[in-house]
Image (tube, rainbow, N blue to C red; front, side):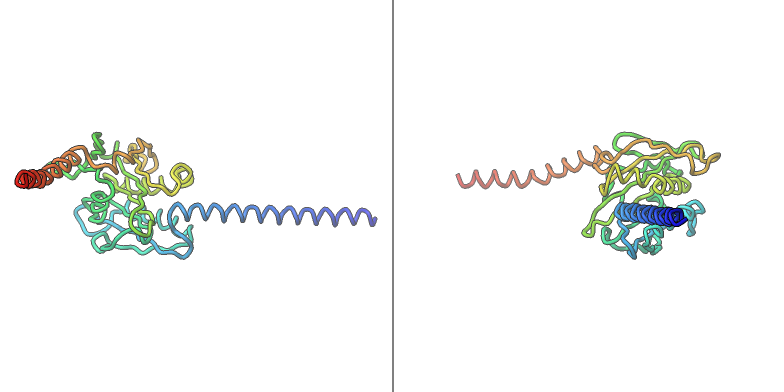
Length: 263
């Protein structure tokens, strides 16, 4: 009887020890996963980030799909034990890099997005047609045209610049529903993106398929356009080179004249 009791005590103790070790292992894994997520988003515990919101096309409010995108982003910020400050695009007059920023909407409805594209992604341009809203993205030499409700594109980018080196996340879509699709894609694929890019920059072109039937749920990765988007467009590069040459010409002529006068 004593031996049976002793065996029971040992079994209970072994079970308790195994459960404790399992709990500790799961807790350590959860902490490690949290640190990785915080590192990827640049959101340490109790930090503050910016949620820069756009305006609805043709109005002063925020589109319903952009509100859903904000909810997606608010959830991931809360999961990182951080908190957000929501700022309208026309009130976000400050630099970048000091804190993580999530910027939502195209450059037509979001002035800050336009500034980010000009500064950080000079290779991405919107082709405007008379009387129509911009629905064509030019990335490098490639064109991507939206077909409303069928095929729409959005650029999802993680960029680092400024002194603080906190990332700026851009959700630059041709339609409001594509911004929500990009936010959802980021949340769902964060671990995969972190493994591939670490804390480095990336610019991804995503395609939202048949949004009129499937909403923001069916998203395809078209291409990694980091190099093309971060490099000035060929026409601009040639114009810049021509301007540099033209500026250098008078100085060269003056130097030649000076040399001739001395001789």
